[in-house]
Image (cartoon, rainbow, N blue to C red; front, side):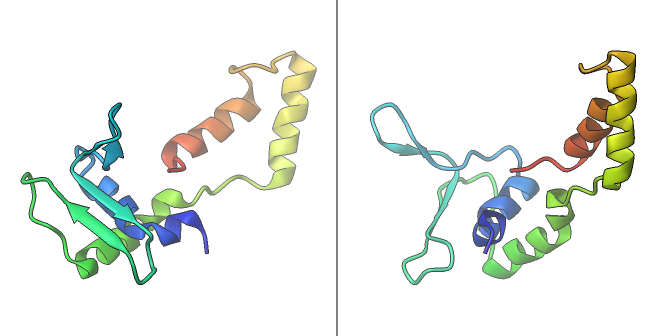
Length: 116
């Protein structure tokens, strides 16, 4: 199972409330942040909601948010033949940099669907 699926709660909250900070450890190893999700899917799952900015979401709400936004994880690249054609044209034109068709085409897809 992919990391994205295993951590659907964290991902759903980050998409739905982008201003919240996932719980981390500060320089003194003390937790800080608005929420935390650990051991997703295991019997000892931990879900901490420490923010007062929003009400604590239910599991059903988080699953719905994830389902509504999971297209953000999908990168729909052009066919390999088209990508290779662009790469060939860039090599032929001496554009193996950020101005080439290959780079710009793939960057647009990555910008549209960033990996988390």
